[in-house]
Image (cartoon, rainbow, N blue to C red; front, side, top):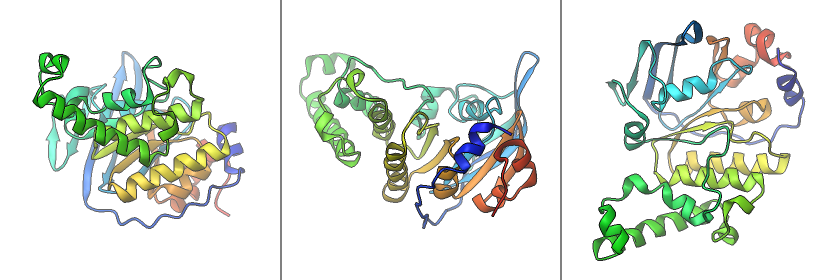
Length: 278
């Protein structure tokens, strides 16, 4: 049991309701095992993700949550098991190929270009969509110019969606933490992902910032139809916005189901939550 999980279970929930209809399985992780030398990060873990759902991964620190996201988007390659994406077994896929196939990600630690503006940071998320050569882009001529204008329109649409118009020309290094997290979400959305991986999107935020981020995550899921896999320690948030939750502990799966099922799972209570269902 972790103290932080217990404390956050006692905080007021953000009270968002979910009304999404999940589709067929889009991502299926089968018997995934990952080791670093003699250290087992993941052991025989299986779960699936359905199209258009919000799938949460929770567990104590060191449970293997971020390692699992790293497996999904190609940072790590598991020693055992396989990943089925869109009905096809995925081979040795790296990060670049994963991004091209429709998987985008934010990180636990903000990874923005601090000296660049909000608009320019979001534009970097359009990189894989650009077809013009580096030379044409440098000359800003003909098709390259028209292409960049089209991509800037998309970036501005994301800025409007995230309600950050007032800071679009501000270097992100000058922004408060909560807004930087929102910009990082915008950069991931710029890639127009089919699956969006969010690694602790609300870490370090106050209650108001968490409520805003929850609203944006739900809107991304509802309006864009984006499938979301998220890691989050705030149990009020997880239980309110997730369709299904998988629980890891010391690299093993100890629970999987709806928020209510997980909340009442005694193994999950003992290992992480500390409190059961009411």
